[in-house]
Length: 278
Image 1 (tube, rainbow, N blue to C red):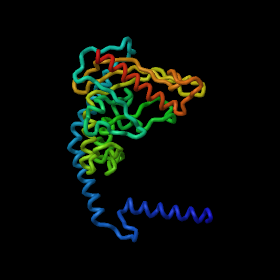
Image 2: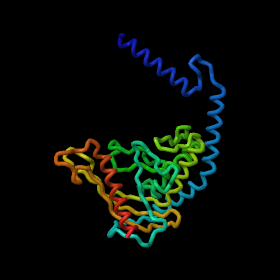
Image 3: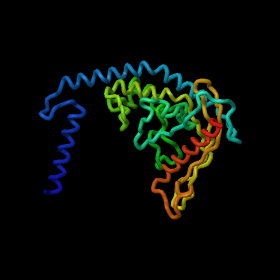
Image 4: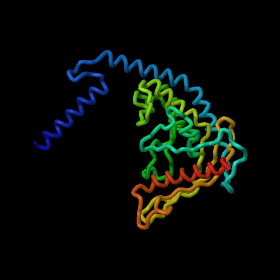
């Protein structure tokens, strides 16, 4: 079969699938009123859920902005906590490669801490969803609190709809997933609101990954309690390529930027646990 003919078949198939997906039409070109009506009802119900949750996320948004304004300009000296924390913070970083919701049915399993750069805390919508090396600065993926702020904020479906919520929002390969998209959205928003604490990090050193392995990120990190409105803990954390942390001699990671993101968050998690669980 000629290449042009094969391309034509493939493109034609894609066009048919696209029509079915976005217009709700059957293969014979006839629309399916029941399917369209069901979709409209789902979208309407989702917006109602967002309206219900919006005030609580706005409280989190205001608390996050206020906490970032309290971050001291001076660097962190010794890692410390000014008071005993109850509940204890548990930071489990967000895996942007599959976005598994371990905390879907048991929020405690996903931890109660999110993470945000100090420069973006006042405008969570500016946080990059999947930061990678092309960003030309260091950043880590936002968690479910920030994602909740996206979709309940001015750029969500209640505003400009830049952060669209579809029936597939929150679809993850986890057990016990809620089949109804509206109830699934509600559960995912609950996961976001479970994040009582936010790690505010300020990058102080960042060497972009290169072939020589000269790469490191270091940051001052402050733990914000969004309910008490203070910054009870502070620490310094760093991240680097896996091979610079004791990997096999001569082994070099193919994803050094991701390595830096992961090791940075692992370092924070370990330090935070040692500070809050003496």
